[in-house]
Length: 316
Image (cartoon, rainbow, N blue to C red; front, side, top):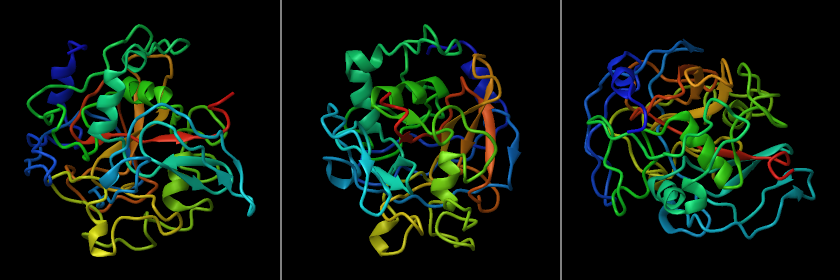
């Protein structure tokens, strides 16, 4: 454990809930009972998860990515004016969102994150210029009783959880991407589809829809109740938690909430930072794309994971 106050964090009341111990990757994690999570403010409605469905990942079967070295192109513009996502980036495959940026098809998985920790370059990532995370070199998931087992061979295609904000930020940097934030670079502000990467990918570039898959909530379409499931688990029935606009983009509502680069004080180690998408471990009503919840960036909670984004600012 790298932060002594983690126990205090898990003892507070943010509704990301406690989860069960993880099972093997042959099936969904065993059900957990809701616990408490750290406090934070929420906007845009109450939350329950949606179900998650996985997109394909680059070079791995079943949604598991290779996490190998980046060998692909550097992006560009397609014939129809859309952005061309670079290939060969580490972690989940990238999905183009309009002409501005690309986003991971699924949440980062346990398999992806294990690759990061096993790479001396990844595990040694020092976030220079970001004083809130400077000097933090232990990005391992939390190990409290509420957190699932994190080990090779266990739930490889499940979203990684109990990762704090600095760990998510460091992983995305290592992967040749960035934690989703403001379109064109930097930290995100309020949910505005013209400026916020995560919100634009969820609701559409003009905020066309309330939910990831359409205008009305559809119970059971996303993983909106325990247990947390593997990425892509709802696609097998033909209709799942997949974007209404960007085929292959999945899991943005439900399963786990996702960190974004949106912090009240970017340079404070104890600042609250934004999460989006809700969690299967939360109790409440359906989470719309506009909903957000702020959480202390040092929190390592079983209901929070993340995904990364990419745009031209990353490679400058």
